[in-house]
Image (cartoon, rainbow, N blue to C red; front, top):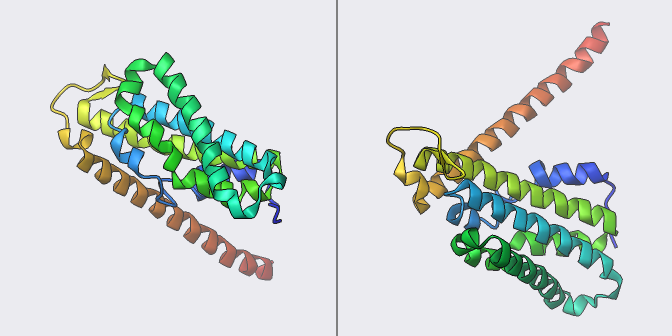
Length: 217
């Protein structure tokens, strides 16, 4: 079995930025369009995914030596479904108003490619602590993406944040519609890709100038 050589902090940062579920890998995009018209909805969706992603990685890593490779997929799905059911029932009991709006999408977490993928490519091959760090990083990355998208959509589309009025005037109603979700995700994805390109160019320029400075010295 392969084992990661990254530190736990590197694994967390990797999930948050380098392999961000929404802005980098562009998977599990359904909730980024469907529930991000409100910061509150985006927050609770993000927290739910952090919990499920982390606990699935923990559980799969814990039982990895007992999983028969031939039946690993149904086992992964059972583990994911168990934790999704737990968060679904908890939200239905303790956050009923939010659950009425995003309950369907909480249940759909069971089909998130990002959660299944981390169980398949990482958790089943690594020890518990690195797997938890990986799951936590991926979950936080998803959470941050939901917060950023929700922030701009609710502010521009309703002039409010968390349901509280912030800006007076005529809002851009398209931002709270599904089309606005695609628009916001596309713009933010392009922005972060542009930032990555600029940072890579600066690193390349710094690497080229370093040898010349040493030679001159």
